[in-house]
Length: 496
Ligand code: BES
Ligand code: MN
Ligand code: ZN
Figure 1 (spheres, helix red, strand yellow):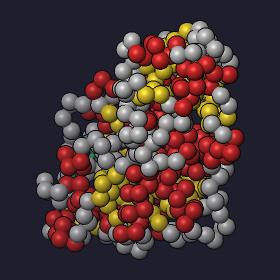
Figure 2: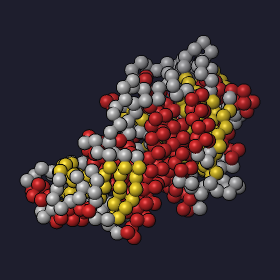
Figure 3: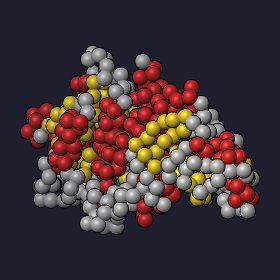
Figure 4: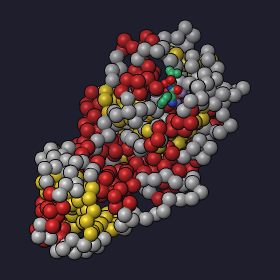
């Protein structure tokens, strides 16, 4: 999709379609009002007859409206005037995009930035218009033998009322495009099945990013990981025919000595549970167990696209978790790269095993901040459902900044405690730590396990088990939390 930002009058725009906002109780946005006047009240007449209610996401298409240069007018409901919140705005814009695709319109002039959104400025509206349109129009049909037809919008012009508003709207739209590109990449990686998206495939994606973006990629194979003592990571891969990989991506947008933000993403390309085998129902969804990794890929891409003035390192430990004669067994004890020994009481708690070595490895970058992202526990879904990601941190300021970034971009997180009191659930009779802490507070004890490997730096952990993908009829990856992470990096640049 190609977006451009323009200023001009709604009634004067030529082309296939002009899109304007209407509200409940027959209220019009400024642009809808202008169209109505140009058409000598024709639009008000239609609205008065009750053909569109103004509810969020309702649309009404009009053809050949007198006094309007475009072929069509698309009216879109944004709810109650003056009461439009962030979610309403995004839903209404997405509905407009879907309607444009339905009628196979390739270009349109969008007059949606004149809608007042509570507490948000023009740049926010431009950013989120772009993001929600790209999100709504996303399709994954790479693996279908018959592709869906490609008709639908290709060029969208986003309008502002005054030319002095162009710069801020353009800035917002540019950020929106970068985030949308990162989300798209993350969704594609997440949606690919385990027989395509293997650790080797993810490593190849990092090399591809190196060719297309200012990102340097390095891939560590088993021999290199063995030399580093990454037994926690390696033992998870023992039950699989696919070799594990540790993928490192470096984006350097600041001075070489500026401490980087390190993003670590769980890249479990299929999690059958290992010897502690999972039940069959919905096991296919465990192809999404690499969505943390996918969010690191997506965020790296977005940061490089925006040429953010900071250093970002992405680290992705990647493996499968399958049962096999060579696989981990409950009771096995392994030594992690940090030197801490781990008793594997449940081979299905593998995410923390591959992450702990990657987190230890992160220290060599002398990071300002380390953030890991992982589909870590079913317990997090029980606690928080599908709306926020779970957030844990050993640093209050970092946690607040991440929560705030999530609020700004409607990709929210909710903080859970990492109290010392929970640590004793991980006591082991045979090793330094057990890899599971019992049924109670499962998301917290998983985070507590990781905390033992991150004491030397400011660290946050996202449990995205509930947010990274949707099940059911809409089954598919969401690309979360790429919007949150990218927003955090943007804000971080502004504050340092
Ligand atoms: N990848 C899963 C977590 C998961 C489960 C995410 C269901 C989304 C939906 C993880 O590797 C896992 O299996 N965790 C176990 C931990 C338990 C054995 C302590 C879980 O959540 O059941
Ligand atoms: Mn598991
Ligand atoms: Zn897993």
